[in-house]
Length: 319
Image 1 (cartoon, rainbow, N blue to C red):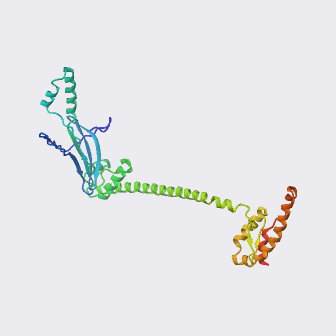
Image 2 (cartoon, helix red, strand yellow):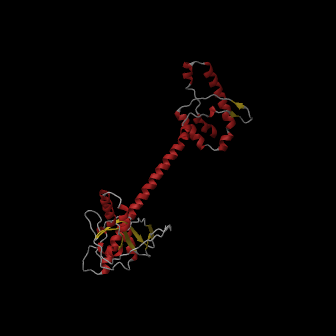
Image 3 (cartoon, helix red, strand yellow):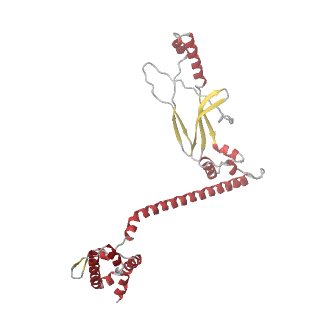
């Protein structure tokens, strides 16, 4: 059985030849479709190869599949009917000699590759040969066999990393123990690689989540850094009198102290001195409003130094 241009496998075993004659009578529609069904028992596995007979000793595989652990594969067969020799001669009788030669060559080509073939290759004996183990040594090693199939099929591990490389005269138990150690070391390496991939994925997910949170919190941070002043809002005194105040710019240190005061002062202490602070702010802001409304730009620049220092609010609250 050729696998590629440089590799050919020799198949040994029992060979069977089956024949099937499909009859049709008149207008009877025999639309039943042929199927190839393959089943595997629990803890058993084999390679199913489908192809045709290309020569006296050549099996040409077209498709292959591994069937294991109670798998069931149903493959529909697309069959093409070939006319009988008598029907073929009657069909080409009216053709020219050149056309008859072409039809005969095409029919001979169809007949060469018309023999359908199926090959079953047991995997457990092949594993024993690849791992340099004695025959039938994996018969009762079910877990080891499943681990080997997983490493070979899923992870494409080279056989040299798992095969026995010790003394050829060692017992079967020693050889199996050495192979089990090799399997365990490779599985440990695969588990460590999986853990690293999981941690890397979690780290990238956390970074994406943190970046998204920063984008969502961006407007609020900008708002807190703006020149926000208690005097910018409309306030009410204890008796419900509406007090209007002008916007008073502050320095950066005053803003920082004011924000610190707001986070540290308790609501009860702020309410207790609320009337006193508002009265003080009203007097200062009224003077500032009149100065800014009546003076020009040059004098206004000089008045900016007389800003209200809200850092003294903490001292006023303690007094």
